[in-house]
Image 1 (cartoon, rainbow, N blue to C red):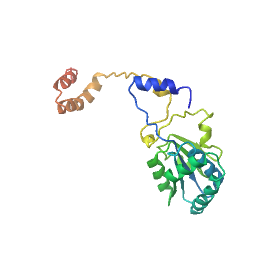
Image 2 (image 1 turned 180 degrees about the vertical axis):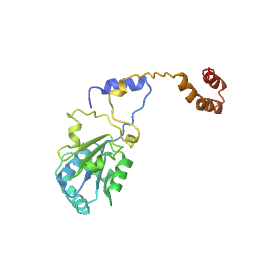
Image 3 (image 1 turned 90 degrees about the horizontal axis):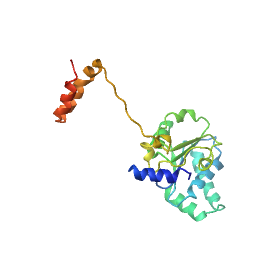
Image 4 (image 1 turned 45 degrees about the vertical axis):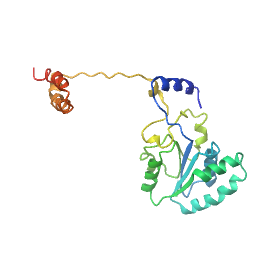
Length: 217
């Protein structure tokens, strides 16, 4: 992975943080103008990781989907790690034929893939609506595999759908932060009443009193 992994592992144990590290995943978004060979090589490239790797193709183009199902079988015959690739795609390979762009967005955000390749003619109509993915490779010259090695993005990424609520490893994970709060007289009078109601609802009367003692003085 990268040089930060040992340090981050110790940090996670020390701070009692958990990281969801499941089998590697890829989701490829393609359209009628996508080079099918690029789709096939990306899917096989992910499948060779492990028999449990997840590989998903999403497209609205039925012709591309049908052609993919035929040609990937021939491609698998020629690759190294054939047994792993074949078992991975058989167990966890999926082709999603979407009826609309809305379905595409919904599918991607639901899957929340570790790696997403957007290999379509107009990526901009999708990009800002995708909220759940570990990393997004944009355009035909951006295969997932380069993100494994030398483009500078972190390769410690959320899997098993955890991209719905977490990000890849980043600098924020190594910062300790402190909140500084200052209220004015006007501020405590404005916020104090609702805060008091919440404290009283929780039956924490002394919380409420500490707020009231600073109001309207």
